[in-house]
Length: 320
Image (cartoon, rainbow, N blue to C red):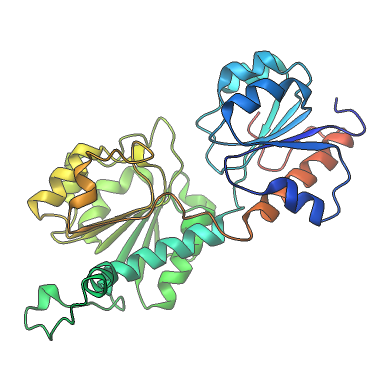
């Protein structure tokens, strides 16, 4: 059970949770740490922890008071559920907190590739005014009438589907249980239909969670099945793709381009060929990072604290 006034620990290298918590009138005792070393030193003081990338599973043994982790991220693959359950620590994800942000980022990446915005920015940097182009394959494109395959059509993928429909795209959705609904897509299929649907898509957007089933989901066979010159957009997790296979498909010209907000290793290694490939556009895992994010996560935390204090057994976005 949580004490009546639990101590909160906000653990993130950059996000301003303590400041936002104070601004919204939060009255619980709290502190903020900015590094793993600080978290290691002070986690024993915490009853409630907000954390994501800074979490290490050995910290559970150093946190005798810790009863609840509100993950800052929607993905929770970094947490060992058995370790948390054994220590009596509850866990809830931030699923939904970044649904608007990531879906908007995904449609922005699609538009950036279609309208050749990375190239335009590069031309601006070198003060080059590009002339008109006769080669159709090198011109900007329109989204109307194109087909988007959304792999993992939950909150993020569903909103992406609705945004894509506003641009006149045909949307195919894949999800583990198609009976849960199409989320605005024109068609919905199970994840097992991936290979059958890939050849139909002009754009393939990965919005699925990283699970044992989705790790390495997109490899050489899947890239080969994609329509020639199709575009891959990944706002899920880098490990959903087999990165060397992605590089090979891009280098061969079979894939037209890739827009990546996530990579297998983050930060992306300086030696990675992805940096210098002309048909790759990279953003540094900023899809969910907006001015509203801290408030969205604090809303989830406060809802779950109410449930814990009321003795409810189910948390919002409960994982453990």
